[in-house]
Length: 467
Image (cartoon, rainbow, N blue to C red; front, side, top):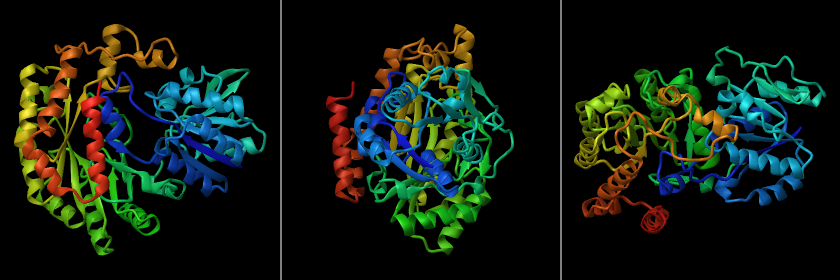
């Protein structure tokens, strides 16, 4: 069958944890999950296109022109909770204009399947993983059969949505084909901190064994890809797509120290001259892993610092402390690896003093970058469960159903007001990035004109458009 996968336009949402300029400029990443879906479909013999309207800045009307030329049997979209009503808008538009089946997947379909299918623009859905269920669904549609017995599929029976529960069988991550990057405009992707082209992102594991109250990733099963499988994809990125910088999007890349070291050693063994970055906790790095990571091309580590206050860290079940943070950052700098610190404002027990301490800590640590978020109750997190307990209702469910508009969620756990949190987030960025010593240091590290242009664009947006 002919299948078109569409990544719709993104942007800033009122309930976002980030400032508008951060949502719009921090990272233009490839839609890696859709690229996995494309690879699964190609592997089973279908003709696939993937339209990244977000990277190409295409309106749904321009995407329609491409779809008309391709004449797909099926259109696939991914529904994230934040973007759910954008998905409904685009799916409804394509449904009205084209004679194509609409299939939707993504974490929102898993969390709120029946609520999502209260919208008639969706014909079928995939809850859970698509590696096995999606090919089975397509085969059923080819044979004009309804997918009554296929696990993880949502369909309609007499107009009413029906969910076949997803399989609880653990799927080996290595069985997934590599993402179909040949369908993507790889030259367009970058992040605020990236320096080389082409740039892409990769996943080498899913889930996280830690249980931070603000994060939903720990609700996913933790699975790892094998060392050779990971490095084979790195090698494909380098040789086939001329990619020179990779950002590993794993929640905690170094959690399995021996595996991480083996990946680094395999990169060195194959002599792949790649720059890469990853995310890590501060309490799981040591000189052994940082030394070999640096040799293998690790140029940057994103650390989840969150706060300078040990009491605040305890309140969000982070299980780290300031001493570990200082040790990890100083050790990372010793091996020539840049650091980005993730911070949060609006956590339980946060005060004006704790926020100012976090700002001072970021400067004292001489971090290369910071990203500062407003703590929010994301779907499927402990904080959201607390919000439901306090108010007796699930905002995200009501938002999906169209019963609640887009607004900034309350924080019953915080004594800081919305105004104060917003003010301190802006102050954090201003006090960190607009220091003369920092600006001079950053200018000395710039490697390309595109990097300069990216920084100038962000500064202009910050000064004139960041409202």
